[in-house]
Length: 232
Image (cartoon, rainbow, N blue to C red; front, top):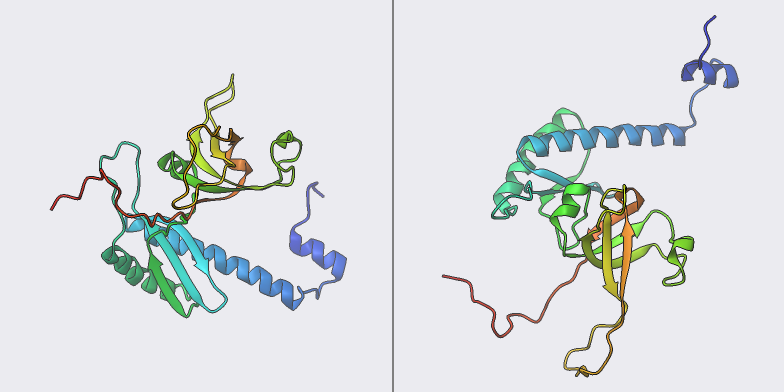
């Protein structure tokens, strides 16, 4: 007899008997996991195979399968490219075929470009959107690290994304910078003598982040004096 752990099927047979089977709700849960894993693989292989980046998969209870794609990005590219209608249609056609072949059930398929609240998925996305206002949700509250500057229970922050400088032997991380001073209302005069609120800085690593998205900020002010009109 050799040492080591027993295979799972033998373990459950010993504990619950040879005729053991998972309760229906557990079986449904495990099936759902297998389907989601298969869906992720199919969609990612299809999207990247066509030359796009997979941003997000959203599957609603009503059977809607929404796929968000984007153009690949690199730090040295001169002109940033954007997804258009033709790109979405091409991915939509190929996904319909791939999902049908693998018998993935859904009622309606939508393929779109990222919205104003685009999720940030990894290091390349953070590099791409340096200098942009983002919403960060941490996995755990600040706790003692808050040092009385913000609530110890706080996990959500909004600020400008920056690359933090390396400290000692630690690699460079990330930080967001913000001010708790409320933005002036339209038409409100701001005194030049008013002392601005101090800037707050939150340093973090990607492992500490549960979710990161571009802040959905819409500018309704339109063109400002001095703006250069687009060339014809």
